[in-house]
Image 1: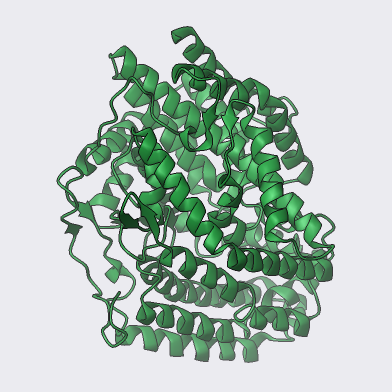
Image 2: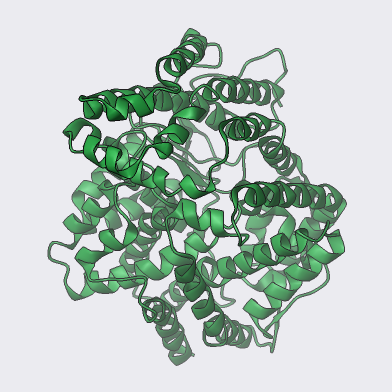
Length: 612
């Protein structure tokens, strides 16, 4: 941990030594945002945001109705939105830098303080902007439509129509202000506590003390002894901290319940569906289709996997174990990079060219480090800069797929950036499409080049397990969240009750071939999506099933597909998912749509059964 008096280096070297097995691993260069924590531009931009947001409020608060009724309503409203967008981008730049620095080492007090201070100042500044979308939503439809006939304001139609969907759930201005201001000491503070706690946890495995990522990674080790030791270590540490995680879960669920009740949302997931711009009945159809398919998918696959291990059942720590007859090799970073770029290039040289920039221009942070956030993500930052990708690369085949996944996000975010700060962001359901498609391209490329039968089978099992983790596991997570949030309305849930709900949904989704041993009941504690983005998880299942259908279209008629696909990504948040899928002849509202996506997984399991 860095000394509180010593600031972290602003520009890390382009690569760490890493291990001999992995090769040099890149660290990101955040200087494209700011040169360091003490960069004078940070304080300059914070002051600019504070001043310009206050001026914006003085210029427009209480005046939008008059602007909308004037003769030059279109140009006047366009100018207001343009000024708002400039401020939104500048605030995005500041919080992106602070968040990425913090993710690099969440246990460093200097970085934590910097992140907290930037959050606090931006929250205060954004209070001056809160009125804007509220007032826009109070304007009449006829006045807005007339103003949007002017091209400058009409450009923002998708954004305006999106915020109009929030209108029924908006509150009186001062209540909105209170909710917003209190988020710093409420929701955001609890999320930060969770992140810093997870990063500080230590796990003792066979005499070694590890952080969470290498410990989770051991669950894929070729040694069953190591897998069990890792599972036991995870369980011990999670149990030691379960009281804190129970408090965080209860507090955030209640916080959401209060917000939902004030806003008028009736179902616990309605606010997520609204932000995803997806109809609840579509999510319900997806959820039911996946749950109905559990016996044909996960139950059948894990029964088959237990047979490969010469057993009737597998303990939970062997769920993602590699095949016993296939040696697990470590994949060097340069091989992982070349694999993904080659797969992308075969589909679209333009797509590969964008992905190449992530490596050449140091937009990726790959090594495992003490205090670094676990998992992986692609952060879009702001349109005037570029995305950054964070990994915890350890050389497993799944790490290669994670690289392909996050680069898919990165390419999507890069292509959508020209839409601007207000319209580049994509709803979570479609945001997962590009990432999962990137995985599929990489998998198909690797599979086609594999001639060894054992390796071919290992690749198929890896892909099936990834798909089950993306579809079945995430829908089980969604079921867990629904039950937790529904019960929280009637009072706090004990750790024992949370454990019970977790085991219920896991047993239902995994099936009888997975023997859930004591200790697994606390594994709900470390899932970050439950904390960061409640009900996010179904977006993965949506994306996987959608990609299966998209890929089937690609295989049937590849001519012109890549161009249509990249155009879909470049649309960002300017179009509803139904409009984006039309060029491919797909409709996710069709009840049979999800069966098509799930059948792809089923066919892969069929192939594995035939291989024996």
